[in-house]
Amino acid sequence: MAVEETQKPTPTEEQNPSRGDDDLEEGEILDEGDDAANSKAPAAALLRNPHPLENSWTFWFDNPSAKSKQATWGSSIRSIYTFATVEEFWSIYNNIHQPSKLGQGADFYCFKHKIEPKWEDPICANGGKWTIPFQRGRSDTGWLYTLLAMIGEQFDHGDEICGAVVNVRTRQDKISLWTKNASNEAAQISIGKQWKEFLDYNDSIGFIFHEDAKKHDRAAKSKYQI
Image (cartoon, rainbow, N blue to C red; front, side, top):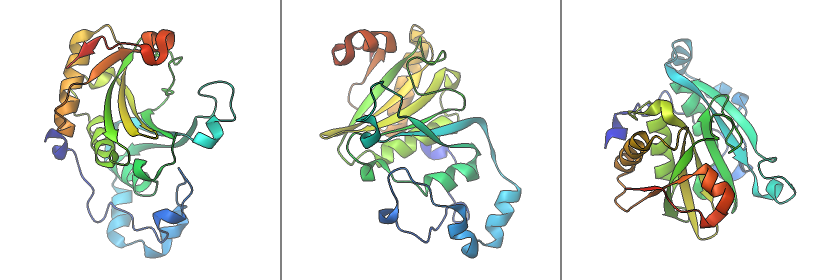
């Protein structure tokens, strides 16, 4: 798959946290000091010579328990961490829960820096999203490959991409890829086809305009399908 060409973690890039995943709260990040005693010289060398990404990206998290207490949608979303290098990405990715370990109703986002994962954001307002469903607890690999394709600039129309979100729900997980200009059909079709290739996904997927989603909620219909 094309995504395999994106830089994967090397032993020196991966972290080895002293705490297990079960000790973390949802969305919690291990303190950098937890691994200080175990840091090796190669790791220090990597920090001195980081590999910059073309864009900076921000992880966001929407806790299901926080959402239930909010009257306005999106008011409980909070940014977690912004990264701009390969090393920063793997440091944060390896120290947070994967979708399969998040609570029911959680939403986890990765968006280009300074773009908020909301329909109201000016850059997202005229966009839309492709969505791929997964069996509950089976979206971890799809989420990682989506992230690698995005931050590794694997898409021909990467400038169109705002970010991605994984929604953890009772019966299934969903990963959505948000884009800027929904009316640019050629770009959206290209992104959707490449995304399916990166994830080795063969079923049909649909693209919904954010404007339609706001008006019709779950009844919104796909404008494009591949």
